[in-house]
Amino acid sequence: MPDVCSPRLLIETLAVGDELLRGETLDSNASYLQAALLRAGLRVARGAIVPDDEDTLASELSRAADRANVVVVSGGLGPTVDDRTAAAAARAFGRTLVCDEASLERMRGLFASRGYPFTPNNEKPAWVPNGARVIENPVGSAPAFVLDTGRAQLYFLPGVPREYRVLADRVVVPEIAALREGVVARALVLHTIGTTESRVDQLLRGVDFGDVRLSTRVDGPETNVILVAEGSTAGAAEDALARAATHAREALGPLVYGEGDATLASTLGEALAARGVTIAVAESCTGGLVSAAITDVPGASRYFSCGVVAYANDAKTAMCDVPPELIKNHGAVSEAVVRALARGIRARCGTDVGVGVTGIAGPTGATDDKPVGLVHFAAIAGVREVHRRVVFPPGRERVRKFAARVALAVALESLRSGDEPSERPHERAGDLARAARMGPPEPSGETP
Ligand code: ATP
Ligand code: MG
Image 1 (cartoon, helix red, strand yellow):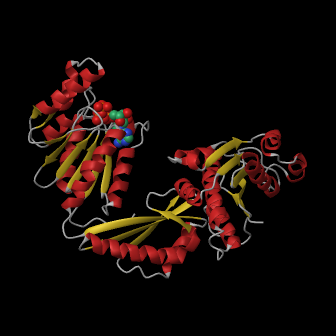
Image 2 (cartoon, rainbow, N blue to C red):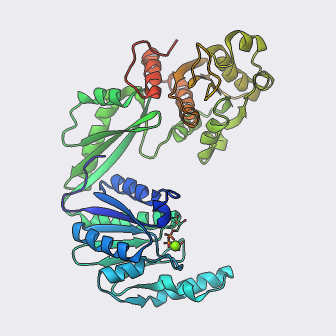
Image 3 (cartoon, rainbow, N blue to C red):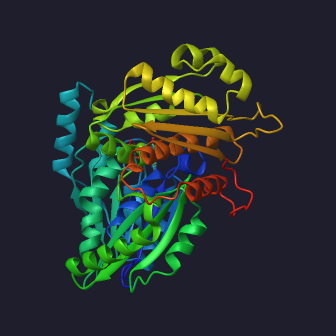
């Protein structure tokens, strides 16, 4: 991650909860905040997890407040006996707990409107350290609060992720961003698929990014390029970022499929909607993940027609008209069959685009010439057909998840290849195979 934090502003996160230390729950609140801060050009310097123990929490809080300028605490604000955050904060900073009447009234009203009994312990979240600034929780009952120790600002947010996220977005991130004076940072993520992280890095080596900081991050079969620009004004930072993004896009060419919040599924959806075309999917080893990803995007009904899971050989024939002799001669996991799946589902559904996926998710099913992780993809759009053969690293879950994303990329490529005649499909196919293996480029290649 890029170092985007002004040296004057040290931010720490502190997650409270025994369940986080037992491994039952991941500290997704910290990840959420880190990503949101990064988008605002700020970096978290340190993160910790502590148990539901008042002594430990109190000492962690005072140590964090000594080190950092901002501490964002998650969890332990609820009504139950294991919620001890407010008490620990009061102890750490020598305050008493006082009742915030407005929060109490709000909670009573909320319970009454839902017909829940307001038992005495439900008063507890309204008791906050003396001098705290109380922040109403728009999506839950327990309020958040902020303590200013003079040296540090401490945000106390509910642990429930839905509540934490709303408060992080609406209050914490904007307030922290406003604390930093003199420097405005802007960050942008470019999403690439089709090659390895090291090749992305290599392609960007020749580019002069000036003061814009650059880093890369692997996300499944994708590599993200993160650019962070700083300037004395928002406009200056945004201009520097836009210039850097243009240079990066020139260097990476069609490897970049989108930026910011774009996902493969949303980008594919936009490409389909923009062209006014429809898509159907026939998938085997991904068991519906491709259709699920496409329909995760709101508004997918504009372009998504149908998805079938044609798992058994008979089903490939019955649902997608794959000739049985094709399966017999080439095997179900083959270029011939995946192309037939894509063509067959397109013809059956009368769509413009057809996608086929067939592979060996493992752990069993490998043959001498077909290893676990081998997946064939085909997409047909108009008269253009794209086929890819990829060998993913073993691991059933990973093969299925990665393959679903590559299927979306192949569908996108079939649409875009009509727009960009300069593309070099052979190079890309080799890259894709290497990226999927997440290893160094191998001269033998996996592409036919
Ligand atoms: P509540 O009012 O529900 O008691 P709270 O502020 O006391 O809220 P917790 O009791 O600590 O928060 O956690 C509430 C829920 O949120 C639990 O299901 C917990 O597992 C989950 N949770 C807590 N902290 C985190 C975190 N850092 N990341 C993800 N989930 C979390
Ligand atoms: Mg709780």
